[in-house]
Image 1 (cartoon, rainbow, N blue to C red):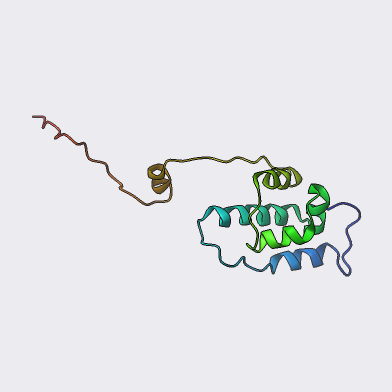
Image 2 (image 1 turned 45 degrees about the vertical axis):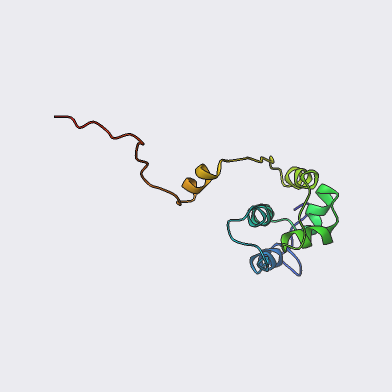
Amino acid sequence: MTGPVHDGPFGEADLIMVISKRETPIDLEEGSPEYAIVHAILDTRERLQITQSELARRTGIDQGDISKLERGHRNPSLKRLKRLADGLGMELRISFIPIEDAALENGEGPVLCLPEEPVEEMD
């Protein structure tokens, strides 16, 4: 947030209250890439205590588009994700992870992998 911070109407206290009462995005499955993107943007914006208008100013993205994105009503392009990351002071990283590895990271899949050939017993 730039400029002086006021405790009066629409000051820092008001901003924190508005942010803490944020609307949960609709139609996003928890754990989905869309859910992760929306929450990464929301969580970072909250941590920085900046408004959608300030993020719009930093990125050149219309505030209404940021609102739609944060509510899960719009999917951003890679170019737009890069601009959002820059505006939030973050680095954008995108990874392709083998499905088996992703399942293990999420606590799914086998806990123990058995060898395909029998193991020799030792005396």
